[in-house]
Length: 119
Image (cartoon, rainbow, N blue to C red; front, side, top):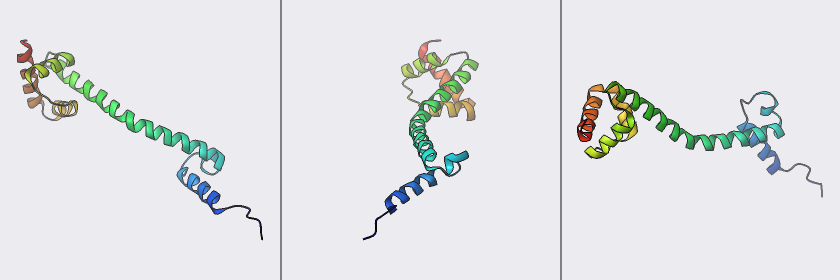
């Protein structure tokens, strides 16, 4: 009986890794050993950064809201306190969108927060 030199499972696994490394620079796209490390690291970063993206957007929304608030004479923390007192539950994404696209509506929201604070 002939000896099996290179099985299909091993070949398929290597082919899968090299396919995932398509577009990588240098020997990372053609050499299995280098490609395996590059793909592993890339998949780790992708997993981690899918979670980090949420925090990045939250930070961006807060910066946008704060910039729009300061134009109205109030800062972000006072606005959120005023919205809580007024009973307005608007998420940061919506507030940031209002600040950019509908300044009139944002000014009305800020006015309600200010009245709730007694400013």
